Length: 307
Image (cartoon, rainbow, N blue to C red; front, side, top):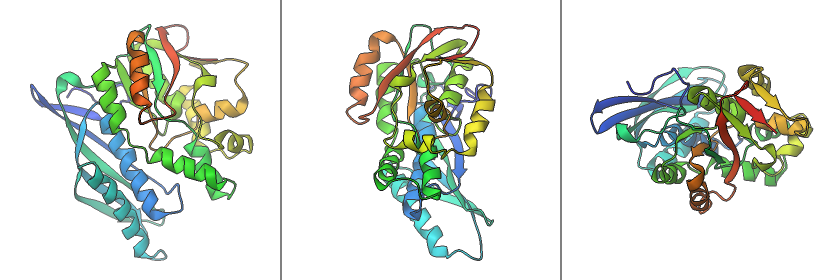
């Protein structure tokens, strides 16, 4: 075993030989958009992204779903699975089967297996003092999902969130691997700050984040101001605990977005500062909102510093 659960990384990695290892992950969640086809597509990318975050190549998937036998038309499940399959097919991932459970709460996702050269695994524990931090996609999908549930999100905000979630992490993974990234992590349920904290803890460093440089999905800040927060907001704050310093200039609403759980979010990449500009330029060919959001420092009294 090369990567296990010790550092809360995005996927497990198991060495089969000197030049071949398996990358394995599983994730599923409740609907966050109204369209079942889009829900399936997002669920597929959310799972596959974990393999890309390690620098791996996804090859197979198993579907996992909870769906009620009564009360919901099975055509809904068919559309969810059709959406997921379209993404798997697009990225060369073979669907081998899956498992379903009769449950009133709909959930859907995948267990995904990928391959990687064990000498090229990118984990969340390699961030080094002096590195630059890059985030590939904007945040805000959690509050927008809540806004959708309460019919508070504008159409253009919903569309922007959808396009953000449907932007695959494949090109980012290839770019960071080619650039020699020190560390990376997929920003999902524990939010930007939760996953940043995991990287800092695993690497024994402090991550310094400039909140004004964090890209936001248009309309997300207004929804945060309107109180459209998820339960994950409080959970993620408890997860990080007191191991963070927050500047007085950071607004309450922006803090909420930094703790907002993401679905199919971007990569947080730590890279030697001398290579950061070139990597950012490459990323922006696919990820228009990619941005430098901070730096890595020697481990201080707190693992996270936000200003």
